[in-house]
Length: 260
Image (cartoon, one colour):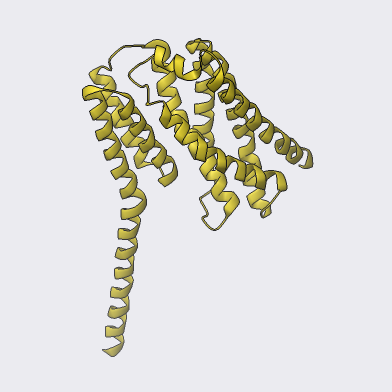
């Protein structure tokens, strides 16, 4: 157990540093990641600056998570939650960092392999997370890091796959319908963190696309936001109010029976 803790406390920050260094290479090299993006526009190419706007705050959450992980803060259960995620977190950073070198080399089919590994591993691990506990900072940070990695991974997968295999190909009717159904279905099973990422993905895509397809993606973003809001905000409150009314009605009935 001690060796495992020591390993992840070294591996996780080292993977973050590797990914951060690779991102700097991708930004400042020639051609840079934006140049490659512009050369390979496809139906799922997002507005590129949305990616940077996503990763900046996400990296702050990562640093907070790493700080608590490396210091061993929290209860034994909280430390276990952070340490288990650290393995797939490290894998994700290595995949994203390695992806950058192939992306900048315009080898999009190879870069897509690393996107697939990262996205599927993040989605699979997200499903195993313990319940969100808003009173536990380590738990919340783990959920945010895990679900934002998985959320942006969905966009990465759509983007890299379309750019690698379907450059300058308009989306068919089937693809357009499947996109709406897929995001709506995912939203119906998502909490506010992952669901928010899905909405962000669609907004980034809608701004990055033009014409009817861009407008349709914007509509999907609004629909997805509505589903996420309904599931995580309106429905729980409606259910709580209904249960409360039921309890009050039962109390009134019991009081009436006692008087009789």
